[in-house]
Image 1 (spheres, helix red, strand yellow):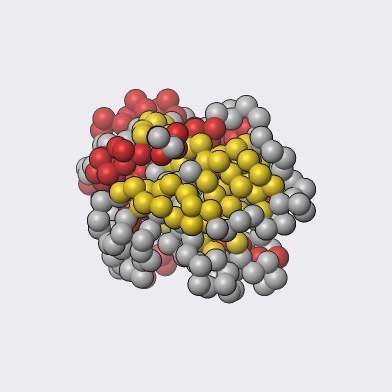
Image 2 (image 1 turned 60 degrees about the vertical axis):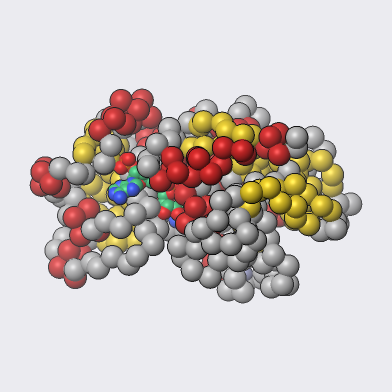
Length: 349
Ligand code: NAP
Ligand code: ZN
Ligand code: ZN
């Protein structure tokens, strides 16, 4: 076992503090990454506060990890020492079931090994995330970070990027489609960039008037304030596709009304409480309400390659780990432009 410096929470809702964790010695197919950067996803906050229940403590969050390969198991073939590599939300799965075989490892029938707040496939060993100096991962679950992508700004692609890329692909986002993105945070800003890169005409639907200029720079041609009820009337029946990234309770019925006939709204944000949807909201117009969870390993690599070709990365604010508790408060106030990324050098001390 190796002892690793990390920051985590000892129990639900406690501030993050320095701690030491143990990671396995590398097996034949493992790579060890010296972590350089880790993005701060709103899911880290939901889980550290046990808002989805069943959280495991101590918890070291972080699933937007970019690091440099420091050591290799003897059978590793896809990486060499010194390569940049990424780890997203998954570090293992059964590799044999239909979802695993079909590139949907996040839905592994045995339950995937989540990067943190989970266990390895032995269902005993806890997993710890990227707010730490090193991670050991089977090369099958490590991503290649293409040359040309800034390592810090690429880190959020490992969750915010794939979580928005996947539904755009699943629902065939293409040139000229009218796409609404709801909520301009970490996921939302990637949804705008990615939908625009696919040729869509993107409208940002936000509660924050102060983000309008940014939304346009990110690639949105329209910007509307959802605090104003008139927005929902004005945009009724407009969108082919809506990507809803809001992390807090809100009324899906109102947003669904902005879909065209047979349009689809994909929920990726996870408000802690359930939201009722009236049948008529969906029946009127054959509207579709869908959900989407991150993406499989192959699709994550496809997204990274898509971003590298088009020079797409996240807009970030780099922080030392010592600012993490303050950063969480700022995320909760929607005061982030648009993803905090931890410089892991600050844990090496
Ligand atoms: P974030 O950076 O905090 O962004 C969320 C945005 O939602 C905010 O910037 C804000 O945008 C809007 N918002 C916040 N509170 C609101 C409220 N009360 N009413 C209306 N709008 C509100 O969070 P994130 O990291 O993008 O994550 C967003 C959600 O996706 C979280 O619930 C997270 O757990 C979830 N998530 C899901 C997956 C998945 O696989 N499906 C993956 C990663 C994250 P405006 O200021 O523009 O209104
Ligand atoms: Zn995430
Ligand atoms: Zn499986």
